[in-house]
Length: 150
Image 1 (cartoon, one colour):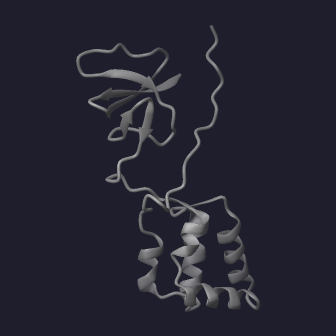
Image 2 (image 1 turned 120 degrees about the horizontal axis):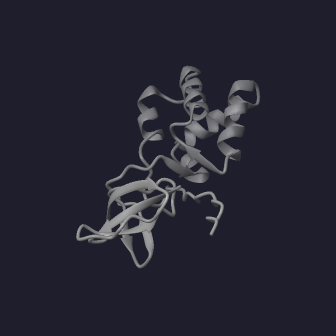
Image 3 (image 1 turned 180 degrees about the horizontal axis):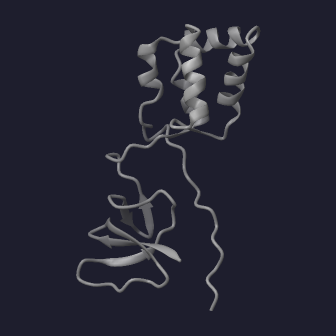
């Protein structure tokens, strides 16, 4: 089964999973869903889907997530990591992941732990977990799916 997106006026208006391509009609035409996160509200032009700014995005480039910490916070975290295994583990996680998903339980636990140790203030956590801006957003590559059999 494949998932299909219905396009009308350059916007995805519907999504459907079924065996065969749905029939185009007056409401729009259908394409195979190329991105596992795309769906209604996404923009479609020149064969490409794009997430509009109005849809929040919580997958950040690693360096963009690290840049959300103030210099003082990041320095304090690095210094504390020398003597604290939990902080060291959080620092290694933040620095080594390819992308940071803000809803990841691991990321949320690490930030909560840093807050509990006084390395970041509770007020700052909302800035750390805010939706990604365009320059912070990490791309998602859809996994390859086996070709349909003839």
